[in-house]
Structure formats: C-alpha cells, structure tokens
Amino acid sequence: MGSRSMRPASARSAAGGISKGRLCGELSLVQGELLGEDARRPDAASHPAEFTYTATWRPAPLTPTGDDAPAGPVLILYTPAGRPLADALAVRHIADGVVHVELGTVTRQSAPGRWELDATAPDAPAALRDTLPRPRTVYFLGGLRAAAEDGPAELDRAEESGVRALFRCAQQLVIPAAATRPTDWRIVTNDAWPVAGGRVVNPYAAALAGMARVLENEHRHWSVPVVDLGLAGHLPGPAGSRRHELAALVIAEPAERGARVAHRDGVRYRQALRPVTLPPADATVIRTGGTYAVVGGAGGIGLEMARFLARDHGARVALIGRSPLDEDRRRRIADADPDGSRLLYVRADASDEDGLRAGLARVHERFGPVHGVFHSALDHTAALVRHLDDSALRAGLAAKSGVSVALAAAFRAEPLDFLLFFSSAQSFLGDPGLAGYAAGSTFQDAYAHALDQRLPFPVRSIDWGYWGTVGAVSGEGHREWLTRQGFRSISPREGWDTVLRTLAGPETQVLALPAEDVLLKRLGLGGGQPAAYAQPSAPVAVPATARIR
Ligand SMILES: NC(=O)c1ccc[n+]([C@@H]2O[C@H](COP(=O)([O-])OP(=O)(O)OC[C@H]3O[C@@H](n4cnc5c(N)ncnc54)[C@H](OP(=O)(O)O)[C@@H]3O)[C@@H](O)[C@H]2O)c1
Image 1 (cartoon, rainbow, N blue to C red):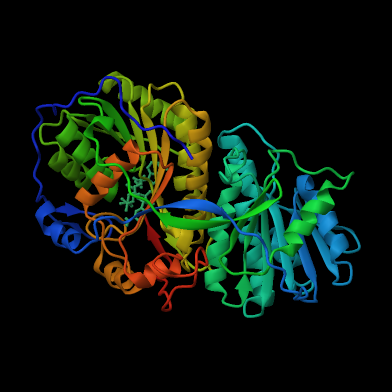
Image 2 (tube, rainbow, N blue to C red):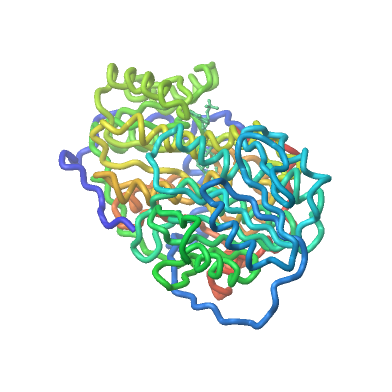
C-alpha cells in the first residue's frame, strides 16, 4: 500500500479566472441524458457520509475439514513456465485421471494424457472439446510468470496465456462439458497482489481474479477460487522439493466460491474489504492552472472530471478519445469550456503507445507538460462468457489493461503528480455478463499497486460503484437494474470529492460504493461473512449482448 499523498510543490490555492460553463446543459450521452448539477443533488442527500472501502489481506489459517477432494478427471492448463508445478499437482491426483494441456503455439497430442494447445488461436480449444474427458477439477496455471519487464508487448503475452486463455478454455472446453455440473477450479497466480508488504511483480495475472468471479456467478455449481503464491518472481523449477510444497498449498485450498487467497512466507491470507475514512478533500492536489490528461475525457465521467478541473482549478485538460470530434462531442465540450481555452480534444487510441505519444506531442504543443493523468476509458460488451466474442473481450481489455500499460509507458517522462485509474466495483462483484470488464478492473487495481510501488509519484485506483446521471450506465434501464441490486448513484460532486480525497490519502486502491445493505453484504461488509463475496441476491439480468462504449 502506498503511503504518499499528493501536494504538488507549485500548487496555488486561487482558482484561475475561467468561466463556469453551463451547468444545466443538456448533454447527449451514450445511454442517457446529463442532467444539471442541481438535479443530481437529491441522490446525494440520501447517501451516508462515507462510502469508501479498501481491500486488505488478512491472515486466515486453514482449518482442515477432513473432506476428500472429489474423485474424477482433473484438467491442468499451464504454460511451459508452469510445467513443474503442473507435474507436481498431477502426482497428487494420480488416481483421478489427469489430462495435461500446455498452452503454447500448436494444437496436438504430445503423449498419452498430454496435449498442447495453441494459445495464439482463438478457436483452438474447441478442437479438443470432444477428445478430453469432462473435468471434475480444473487447475488453471496460465497466470504463473517470472518477473519480467513491464510494457504493452509483455502485457499481450501475459493476456494470451492468462486471461484470454482462461476465457477461451472456459468457453470452448469446460462450459460445453460441465456448465451445470459441480466443477472445482483453482486459478493459480503469483505475486499479483500487495500481500504482507510484498512487491507486486506480476500484476498482469490479477485479471484472472475478475474473470474467475464472473465465471462463478454465471455457473452456480462452480467454485473458482484464486490462489496467489508469493514467489518473488521466481517460479519453481523441475528439480527440488519447492514445486511439491507449492502443489500441496494449492491442493489444500477448499473449493470455496468467492475466495481470493494468498500465501506469503508460510502464512495464508484472504482478501477482505474494510471501511476507510479518506482525508478531507484537498484542492491543492490539483495544480491551479496545471495541465491534465483524461483518457475517455469525452465520455460521461471523464468530461465531468475535465469540467471540475477547468472550472475549479483553472486547469487545461486534454480529452483523449478514439472517435472523431463529431458535432455531439463538440457541443458537449463547448458546454464545459465555453471560451474554448481550457479543453482540447485529442483523437488517439490510448491503448496504442505510439498513438498515445503522438497525442501527447499535441498536448505539449498546446499546453506544455502534463501534471496528472486520469484513466476514464471504457469499451465493454456485456455478454455471458458462453456468448462473448473473442474480439469483444480483447476490445474490453484493451480499454482497461491496454490503456493502463500504454499510459505508464508513454507518460513515463512527464512531471506527473499522480496517475489515477478509474476501475470498478465489479473487481469484487464480478456480475454475470461482465467477464472482460471485471478482468480489466482487477488488472487495473493490481497494476496501480505495482506502479505505486515503483514510480516516484502516487498511482491510485478507484473502484467506482454506480454513476446514475452521467456515463455508460446512466440510462433508465440500467438505473432500474442497478437499483434493484442495491447500488445508489454517485453524483458528479461526490465523485469529484472522492477523487480529491483519494489523491490526498495513502490508500492505493479505494472502493467508492454508496450501496444498500443487500449489496454491502454480498461484499462481506455490513455484517456479512468477510470476503465471502456472495452471488447476486436476485438474478442479475444480463442485457442482451450490448456494447457499452
Ligand atoms: N459509469 C459508471 O457508473 C461507472 C462505474 C464504475 C466504473 N466506471 C469507470 O469510469 C470510467 C468512465 O466511465 P463512463 O461511464 O464515463 O464511460 P463512457 O461514458 O462510456 O466513456 C468512456 C470513454 O472511454 C473512451 N475510450 C474507450 N477506449 C478508449 C481508448 N482505447 N482510447 C481512448 N479512449 C477510449 C470512449 O471514447 P471513444 O470510444 O471515442 O474512444 C468513451 O468516451 C471507466 O473507466 C469505467 O470503467 C464507471
């Protein structure tokens, strides 16, 4: 957990003399209408004062139950780097019938009970569908990685054998065989989370935790716990006893739904949420007259951020988005910046490092160096994993993990006071239909921890609940569905205060979730079982495959 707060040396308290802009302008958004600020206030009035939480890892010794692991075929999916652990797991399941599937670059049978699967080919797992036995237990080791360089190419490799491989194998191998049968998964990762003060050297694996949660919520007979091993970036080799000790830890994990567990130096930990009171909003975390970049800045929440930056802090803001600057965007931006001096729309795909650098050059030309970055991008297709298209998953991940990694690379030389990711409460909830989104969100959280540990400025991730008046889910249909789940809307003013308070405080990751008890209990808050992230209380209506962007 980071411990720095932000106070730019050059911060001044007086706001610049900019026009406030029309607060009640009608903004046509993806799914709704942006109401004037006053119209948003009633939501705020009914909220409790504090709605912020943070994720912690608490020691949680395992109590042996004496239950035997279920008998039946065991499927082990792994990369070459994970082979020693896969073999050690297989030894312990010798009586169950083990099928090894190694994620590589060809699809073929290499030996009896051993297959290779082309992880670069989206449809490859389907070729094995009728050949492999229906699994009772599945180990997914595709997230195991030695410490490596950070960057877009490394992310692509990690996602190929990690979250994209999990998605494809679940969709094409396990769902067709066992969608309605008890199936115990174990997703094994290493060094993905900041447990017991350890370094996060493999944040890429954290995307698996978000997808695991969704797989569970879409299949009520499945358990998909995630076990993160503390290896300090060194995977076990094929010799020695280490791989067997690690296999014993993994096999000892109960098939518990919703569990996120970590092992560090002989201690077992569980992820849990705890309420956190952030420091009061501190306007000096934003430089008066500073320059900021908001990826997704022409979107619902992004434009609100830009509006507060420009109006309250006299800041200049680059709004980065892929779409052309059409009439609608022009009108909404003009509404937030009537004299056109504060906001600049920069067209770029922020998941592409080169495109982002070209965009940054334009920002330098117009405004000079950038002092802070907001990641407010989203491109998501809501669909159950069984129906989700491979390219839609990739697009969704690109907007989250791809943009986050490209931002860290392209803005490395900027004099940043902070880098702030907008992640989602879906990191913890993992509702049906949101596999790519939840995966992208857990990635952002872990990546914020990793960057915060190694960059000279604070990196933060806010897991937002529901913004009901602006943004991708501000339409009436979403309001009804989310209100039924127990979400309460965050108003733009509350959101902005939460941003200022998060930037002023020490927590790297903040869950900002105004909610009814029913939703808090799902998260182990408000009297529920800690961290036993339960299923949705009512069936969650998954919108027909719908693109939210
Ligand atoms: N709305 C909520 O209730 C809510 C809840 C939890 C978390 N959040 C988070 O808050 C953030 C903003 O959400 P929102 O509701 O404001 O979404 P939004 O209105 O859909 O805006 C998202 C913006 O991201 C841009 N974008 C997507 N991919 C991009 C890329 N590769 N490069 C540059 N721009 C890209 C899109 O513009 P182009 O398509 O033109 O590129 C779009 O304008 C997201 O990170 C979301 O996960 C929102």
